[in-house]
Length: 372
Image 1 (tube, rainbow, N blue to C red):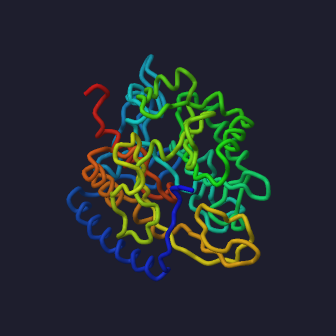
Image 2: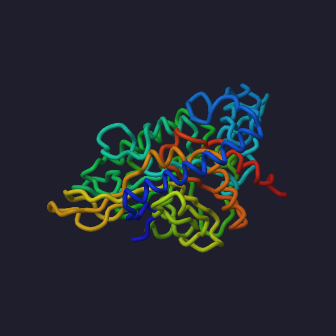
Image 3: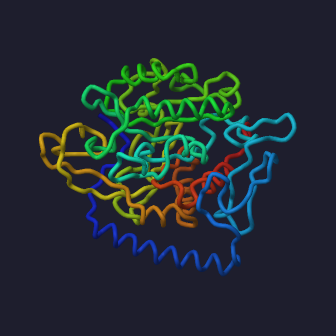
């Protein structure tokens, strides 16, 4: 089964070496930028109220602080006069779905709340969406007869898929001007995913998209109430609103074991696919005693009857480096140059540290208005 989950096996020593190397490079580059630009106000740690600054209320424009791309702040959530925003910015209303850059959380369900032993995020799905994340990467498994979200080995943590969908449903209900995407690494039949969406009352919000057809604008999707897009690996066709990840996506590797491995090649999916996913995270492989339920996804080998299983864990110390600018934005600019296109989704671990929102905002600025 095809999937876009992490599959890597670097040793911890290699990961630590990568951290040290990246720290040195980051300090040098950041020091030069600081000297050239002077002190920068605020910071880049994302919080619900902003990222190192306060947005101009109701301006409807993307605001910046002084000091360059690292200080772009989350945009206002209201427009000017009769203008209403789409995904927090009025200019995005005229953009087609595939002309927008969506900040994305990898392993979004594996947050710091129990029962996760090795989280990849710190906040709930609902909080992630509140903070400006617009795409959630989820890993679904059939575990003991129930659809659950796991990070490889379900014994290390799992939550009911239904509870995650309830958080998404609540956010959509409370935020009628927002479009949300789910990227599902699927270890269950596609029809089971569709049934779960139906049971969660999300199907009324689903957008159906035929491969090869032009995407609607965000404004049109919002006006028509089709504000949820769901892609799943292994889904054939677009029945019941579950779209095939393989039909729509080209993506970078998702098995990076060190910061210096992050590249811009698109080995998964052909270059002519309409959507592009840049995976911007690093993990390490660990062996744990398996207890079943670790089929597919981010676990390999064993996983049942007490056998040893290899499970990937996110590295917060690495994320604290690679999520920051200039590291992040330089890689993304390089991917734009390498592929002659702008990424549609940028996925990270620990989104609350670093400059994911500022970087994706900057990429949005690079996309010319529709029709140009």
